[in-house]
Length: 207
Image 1 (spheres, rainbow, N blue to C red):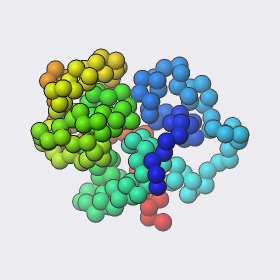
Image 2: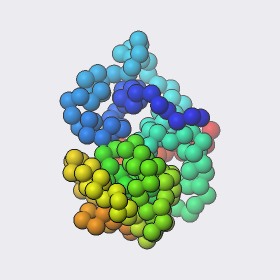
Image 3: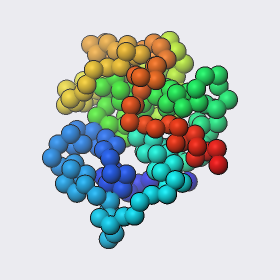
């Protein structure tokens, strides 16, 4: 499945939930779902109640979109990895998604959105343990560090000055002066997205 390239505000409206795909705009009055809190299209305001399958599908799609609008093939692969690992499958899945390079760059406050994080990564502004990595889906291991190329530091600091971010998650260590991010520990379930109902996603893939 090709990457979605349509209007991202449409995704939020269809899910009837803010997915925070446009950075600072999502917190402003310009947010699409704030102005039109109903589904897109001709029948957006008259949708029927979802079936059980529909609920499972919508929850899976929401997590896909919130994780950077990743492809179905890639998301399915993450689920299989999570199911094979020891521990709780749903928590494993969320931990895998948050170990991606684009997720860590975004959560550390180095980008206003995951789409901007992906763009910065693809342009080669980041190093992982001193080596250039330009793959947004690159999964970090515990203890690895993300740094910013010397030539890119002025650009990153300018971007960070425009971002109004909440507190950095406990499981990553960020030095905003030196522009260093360390993937320090695995997050516990209560430190991950509280709005995700991962049991519905497990049921979707169990059918």
